Length: 134
Image 1 (cartoon, rainbow, N blue to C red):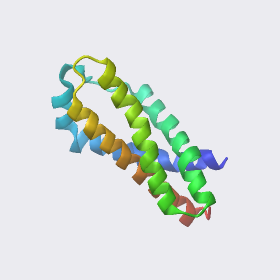
Image 2: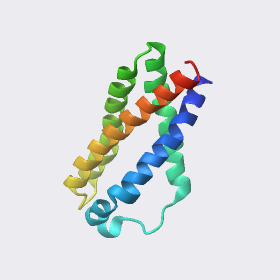
Image 3: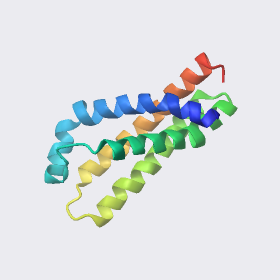
Image 4: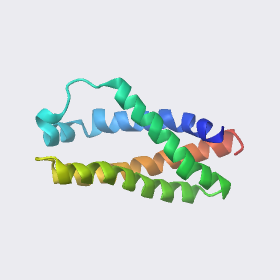
């Protein structure tokens, strides 16, 4: 049950951060890097499925264990490493297999995944420990 609650906290944090990054801050960069590969419309069920799965994963593998040892630094560091590993699976696989997949996009996305997951994990940890007494 704790994993579901933590994922429910993480989900909106992740959604807001990623929409700000992809939709505002990095929008021009992604458009320049992906060109015609970038969809003009978002397939929301697929996007939401990612956030649900990813929120459950960081709740289970990162935030829950950090709460068990009462360590926000563990949430941040393990979140960063988990994000790097997850985004590396996506970006490096694309770089290896998709013709024209841009290296600059890979590097920026790896950095974003690392930061995004660390911040989401740390924020979720702080909310859960402050307001839910975990």
